Image (cartoon, rainbow, N blue to C red; front, side, top):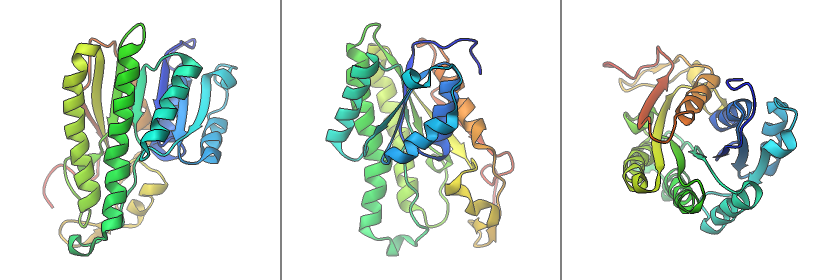
Length: 259
């Protein structure tokens, strides 16, 4: 635990049923936050909360499983209405929900998979940001923080990743625009770009993934807890300070350099 006692700040984490979302929601809970775990499946959200344990002896009032599909405007609106009804405010939104697309040559990529990536990775983040703005503007004290999960793919593509890379580059645009628009409302917006955090989605990296030179090689990964703690550090800042962009990655992954 970072704090020696819990506090009343409220966080909402999307995609909290597994991977980075689960690890981050749990790290926030351990840091004293009240945390809304959101995702599509109620069973995995409840599993995430159960695995988090009971750091403050008050898990029932500090963690809430709230299923929602971030691609659906009505469900997103209902999610934020639930947060307001249950906790009265929102201090942090971690826009983490996202999907990988199968590695497919651009010219063969099915439109349905393109649309699914755009709907989840980009539109979902926009809808949640929009609702967070509305809530954070109206609450007292006013303001809050939004952190977007951008990914290393917001900077550099992997082979055959047009949909995922395009949506993550777009998240950078959303981060910059909402950071600017949020200033007058006391809303700080930043982005964390995570590279090779170990999870079910990145398990293939240990076995070997395609490289830009056409080879297939394994890549180093890092514990997902390191990414989670980085989000907690960003969230701990006062609202008059903001980490606009942070990159946290496995040290040996092929990002910086050539080849």
